[in-house]
Image (cartoon, rainbow, N blue to C red; front, top):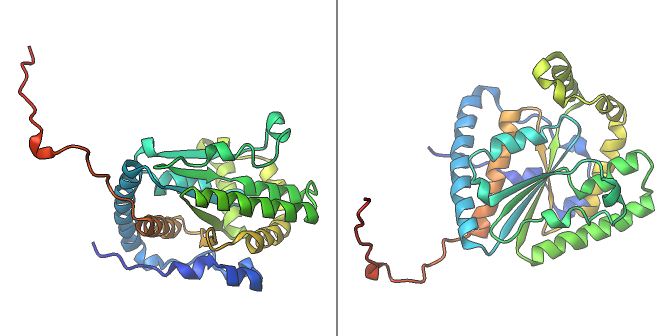
Length: 280
């Protein structure tokens, strides 16, 4: 089918926009046309086919890598994005890492120590479900990291991502942008449906009370860490089906720019003869 491309630049926090100041209220949390949902979901399915094809080339080529970083508020849809957008890729070529509260051992090291081993090797895709950015978000909300310390962390993050980029890793940083009303609905669903009880954490309600603080620190984070090599994308995420459409295109467009290719064989196919064999 023919896919109508969406201009993703309107969701990108480029360097110029970051310098002018980031306001999350400038981006919508809903952007999809409900009347075109079926068509949009068909386009998403086609994009996922393309994603699978590009990922196979990336894996076979073994020269480049792709890192997708997903950040969001509680119930923002990180798990759902991984489940639906990346369902068709070859599991041999992708690693998904969820970063929880740092362990005692991790806290004895610098904040990037636990992250770096999970960066993608050449030929691989990696997804960070939460990431090193937690160190400049939840820690700031709860007063564990000061503004001055955060500035040092931002500098280390920019250097870390530059290092990955220099090694051949493309970095996509996505903030899943949901409204407080949508978060409330999702949290209520987790309370009301027994099959979703396992996803509910009473602590999420405490974090919800800090909505304005998280907004402030997300904005500062994007201003400080949106770079030419790794800009942030603010993706409207109230509508899961439209979120999936945008992120699928973002991945496909990025891989198309990287343009991995199947490597040439080191043999002459015309000279290869495979004899018949007796199965007995």
